[in-house]
Image (spheres, rainbow, N blue to C red):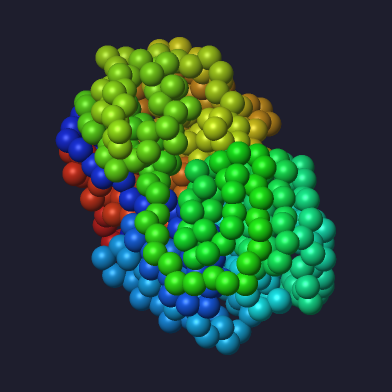
Length: 420
Ligand code: EPZ
């Protein structure tokens, strides 16, 4: 079992290029089932969740290769339409294979997806949409069997702009003759990237990035090539690291307007942020100012995936900040661990009150989910002494070469194998 050890107190400097987006490449890999041909996908980060998606694709009968950041999937042969439970449980985005298999083969057998423990994460919006499309769902012994002799295109209103449900619908109807409209669709940049990928294989989708997406299904899909967008949450992670550790750094290969809400909050707490075409230069403030109220919201609002990062930044601010987590019911796993480091945080339901303290102190902490793990590493950069982070497998789900990246910026960080 490996741990990450960080000795705090070093300001960061230099420049770092940001990896491809986990939450974009995962639905894109599921979508590569659709064209029955070749998909060449560039800027693919080497993450455990990507490896699991490749295992699912191989299980379904696809030929898969992955080298130097490029994945090639050949989905000419689909020999199976069921995803094994042990793979379903590894991540949330395994559920997107249901829509892909329904479009390609008219059926899919999955179980409930796994993913970070962020509170209750039902898939009722996915199932409701499938039912509206005429997809039959049978649930037995924890398995979900979907069949669709024919999928009937229609208008689907999402009660909540669910990212996963939007993606699942887009895939399920991609090859269905007729037009399906998603109203109140998720507007995240990763949805736009999925539309670009699907259209590059011959699909006819428009509206991604807005709350109305129209999919005009077509059978004629072909080989395609795509480059995945940059990971906006990884970019936010490195920005938070600079603000907390001190110093100045350039965060490269990003789409700055994908993190406008996060940049606004970093500026509000005193950081200087220069926005360039495909990078930002961030300079830490002399001291961090508190931010009165931060609400996590669907895109383009403040991203829930950056909530643990901003809590870490506020932990050593000169005053009190309030964070409201509106997206997930249980996404404060990091608060307890930050408190072990000396943070002063009170939690009441969806609200976290963060009273800034002068210093954090290094100690042993445990990651409880992907973004919590990353935020503990960020906190360790300013903590006095050494911090040891366990359960780093969570961090590896979403961050490629995590410790190498922070070390490149000057952090005193290492990964140590502490096998029992
Ligand atoms: C995606 O999860 C991301 N994961 C999450 O990132 C991200 O936090 C989330 O979108 C919100 O932006 C991937 O893309 C792989 P949702 P997803 O469906 O699709 C509720 C990370 O750290 N809901 O928009 O699961 C749900 O419980 C991960 O990279 C239902 O109630 O998010 C949650 O409260 C974490 N019923 C809210 O909606 C449903 O059928 C948002 O969920 C579906 C969702």
